[in-house]
Length: 330
Image: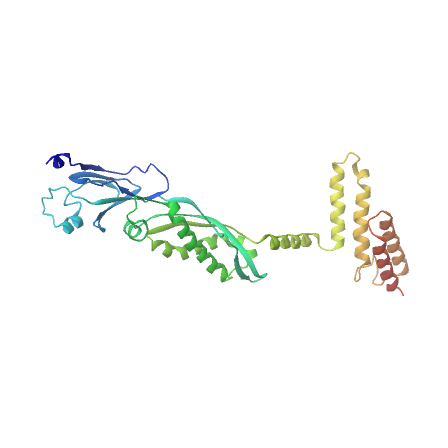
């Protein structure tokens, strides 16, 4: 008899979401019964499920509800209650946060091997962010959170990232866009990935709100090769390199206490090296005319010898160029 009087009834059901990253929360109803006419408060960023004996009975969106037969028709039918609905009842109540879970990170732990249009088989890494929210609480409860007291974003991260990496690998593997063009098409690539992932998220009761590809990178060794290739494209032929060196020496001279006089040797060596090497190489253009005269050859040899004296060229390099020049007039 005393147990009846000590019986506790729940009159207010609510969840204040005091902790970030919680997707599902089971309201504590152990050994308690929900009083007929109890107040259920579901906030704007929430939805609530009533689960009776493992079966989803009713789903409530944002609002304040007085629990009675009018507000809980499905549960009332399941329990075979009469219209009076006077007796207290036991039922599990689950709250779901429908807030957007922003700044979720994804990335490829291992490089993805693809066949690029320009470089052939290469390995790529990709990184970015995404955001999502609970869209269908019933589906999420049945497939993901279940009867857990609390279910958080960190527990779901591994599954979501696996889905993302699988789609990324499939998309990159199609090689629709060359690696060097990915940066220019990054926004389009992000949109295509979101479209491909929408259905995968929806099967868990989730809505994918944003998906961003922030970077696609190459392994270090291939990136170093591209850097060297870019440098060569900037340098061009030796004559352009000589001009570049001369201009760079003038710039340095402006900051040199000795002025242009202090940079004279660097300027002369840079220009002479580029011009002499360019003219001495097979196919190099002579200063004037279409053929190489003895005077041109002697002039080049004199310049090259001067570079040997200054330590720019080694004796072996000078001898090789000397033999090549003398052969051109023999």
